[in-house]
Amino acid sequence: MGIVVQKYGGTSVAGVERIKVVAERIAKTAAQGNDMVVVVSAMGKATDDLVKLAHEISAVPHAREMDMLLSAGERISMALLAMALNEMGRDAISFTGSQAGILTDTSHTKARIVEVKAHRIERALAAGKIVIVAGFQGVSTELDVTTLGRGGSDTTAVALAAALKADVCEIYTDVKGVFTADPRIVRNARKLNSVTYEEMLEMAASGAGVLALRSVEFARTHGVVIHCRSSFTDEAGTVVKEEVEQVEKALVTAVSQDTSEAMIRVDGVPDRPGIAAKIFSDIARERINVDMIVQNVSHDGKTDLTFTMPKEDLIRSGDAVRRIISEIGAEGFSADSDIAKLSLIGAGMKTDPGVAAEMFSALAEHGINIEMISTSSIRISCVVRSMDINRAVKIIHERFGLAGAPSMSPAGRG
Ligand code: ASP
Ligand code: MG
Image (cartoon, rainbow, N blue to C red):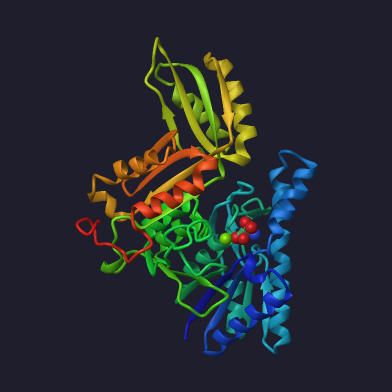
C-alpha cells in the first residue's frame, strides 16, 4: 500500500475502448489498496493534429497561444478517463496541470517545472478519490498556461511521483520497454530489463522516443525509479534507476536514431576570439537548442562552422544566422534538413578505447559517409544522410551483437 503514479501515453488512450481498458487497469491497482495518481497524454495523435492546425494559420505560431491550444488535448483524455472510472463505480476526479499545482517558468512550449504544490491532489487522495492529471502542462509564474515540450507528460508523472514520494512511477506506453534499438527498424532488438539514468539520458537525448529527456533528468535529480512498460500486456518492462545489475553491464547498451534535427553551415567565418561566443549567444537568445557543433581548422583567417538544431527551429535559426553573418562579416550559410543522427550508447565504453573505431569501420564498410561526429564519455554520435539512417542502425546493432545476451565489459566483447 502506498502511492502509485501511472502515466498513460497517447496510444494507450487513443480511443474510447482503450480508455476503458486503462480504467480497468487503474481500478485493479487501486483495489490493491493503493492511492492512485494517473497522468494522461492527449488521445492518439491529438497533439500532432493541433500542431498541424496551428501551422495552417501561422508558420511560427505565437508561443502563448500554442500552449493554450496544445493543453486542450490532455483535457479531453483526462475527463474521459475520469468518466470511465466513475462509470465503473469508482470515485475519480480530473485536474488540469494548473489545478494539480504544477508551477512552471514562463518559457512557453518548453516550460520547466519549478515547483509542484500537490495539496489539492493530496486532499483528493485523502478523500478516497483516484486522481487523474493532465500531463504535459502547468501554469507559469505569470499565471499563463504552459506546456512542457513534446513528450512532456512523462515529466509530469515523474515530478508528481517525486512531490508525492510515490512508491512507483509507471510509464505506460505502446512498446514493452526500452530496447537495444528501435524495434520498428531492427526486428531482433532486445528489451533491456534495466538501464541507468546516465544511459537513459543519453538515449533520450539521441532520439530514443520512449521517455522524454526532461523526465529522466528529473528522475535522476530526485531519485525517482521509473518503470517503463506496455499498457497492452502485464509483462514487466524496463526499470530506469541509478545502478543496474552486473549481468546487464554490457560494453554498449543501445543504438538510436534521431531524424528530428537539421543542420546549418556558416561559411567564411572570421577566425578570431569571440566569434563563436557571438553566434551561439545570439542563437541561444532565440531559445534555440543547439545540439552538435563542429568548427573546421581555419585557412587564411577564415573557417566554417556547422551546427545542428531541431528541424522546427530551422526557419528561426536561419533568420538569426542571416543577421549574425552581416554583423560578423561571414560569407554565407546553407541549411540542410536531410540529415539524421546515429548514436551508440553504453556505460562500458568509458573504459574501452576501441568502440568508436569499430563503429566508424562498420559504417565505412557499408559505404555510409559520416558528416559530423560528437561524443560523450558513454556515447558516440554520427550525422549521416537521412536516407542512410535505418540501414546504419541495423549495421551497428548487428556489429556490436546487441540482439544477443549482453556481453560483459570489456573482455567479453566478441
Ligand atoms: N501530448 C503531448 C505530446 O504529444 C505530451 C505527451 O504525450 O507526453 O507531445
Ligand atoms: Mg511519450
